[in-house]
Amino acid sequence: MCYTVLDLSTHESRYLFKFGHKSYMNKHQQLIDFLPPSSNFRNDASGTITSYRINQSQTKNTERPALVFLHGFNGSSKSWACQFAHFTNHTVIAIDAPGFGESQSVEGGMVAIADEVAALIASLVTGKVVIIGHSMGGMLAQVLGATHPDRCQAIILSCTHKGRAQPVGSPLGAAVQERIQQREVMDDASYGALRVGKMLSGEIDPQTMAFLAAVAGEIRVEGIRCGGFAMQYLDTSPFLEKITAPVAIFTGADDVVVKPDATAALKAGLPQAHHWLLADVGHAPYCEDAASFNAAIEAFLDKVLAG
Image (tube, rainbow, N blue to C red; front, side):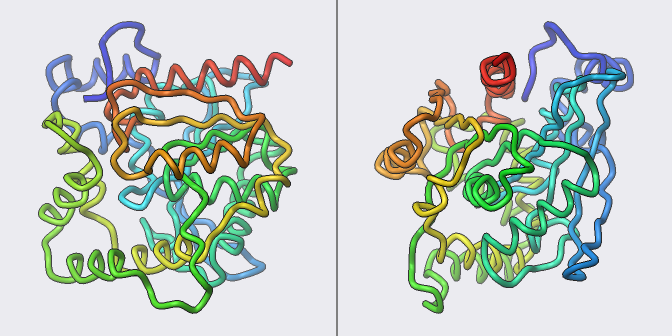
C-alpha cells in the first residue's frame, strides 16, 4: 500500500518482524493498529480538548525538528500512518482537527483553530517545528505560519489552496451540506468508500482504498460542519505575506480536488516557495505513494535546514 520493502526504517523493520512481510504489504488495518495511541490535550486558556498522536524520536540528542502533521477533510491523525513508520529520527506529531478524532469543535474559524494547534505544540515540544498540512490542514498551516511564526521552522503545503473566501455568516455550502446528510444516513464503510471515490480518480489500488476509506469512515458530522465552515470563510491572501518560514508546495499531478487555478493562486501568493510536483498521485500522495511523498519532505528539509 504505502511502502516498498527496501531501506526500511527501524520502526518499519519492527512492524515487519511483528506481522510478517505478506501482512505488512497487504493488511491496512494492521498498519492503522500500529499507530501510536491517541492522547488528549486540554487548553487551559480555552478549555478545548484536542486529540493527537505522537512518536518520540528514536535518535537521542537529535537536533532534528519535530514534524507536525495536519490532515485533510477526509482524514484524521490516522492518515499519517505511513509517515509515523518512516520518520523515526524525528519526533512526529499528528493532530486531529476540531470535530475529528476526539477533538472538540472550535468556534472562530481557522484563526481560532490555529491558536489551539499552537497551544498543543507548545505543550509537547520546545522550539520551532516543521508543519506539514494536507488540503484542509494545508489551509490551517498557512494561518498557523502567519499567526504563530515563533512555532514554525518550515511549512509544507500539500494539495491545498487559499480557502473558499465566502462571506462570514453565509450558509454552509451545498457540497458540505450533502456530506453531512450522507454521513447521517450511511454506515462507516459506505461513507468512507464514497469519500475516497470522490477524492481520487481512475483505478484506485485496493489497499490504498481500504486504508483511506477506513480513516474517512470514522469522520463525525461535527467535524464536517466545523471544517466546512472554517474553509468556507477562509481566504489566506492576507496571511501569506506574514509567513516568514520557508515554504514548500506539494502538488499531486492527478489531483482532482484542488484545481490548477487554485494551486496557481497559492503559488502566486508565496513567490519564494519551493515547488514539488508529485507524479502519478491524486489527492492523497501521503498514502498513494508514501515513499515519494516522504522523500520530498526530506529533500525540502535538507534544503532549509542546511542553511
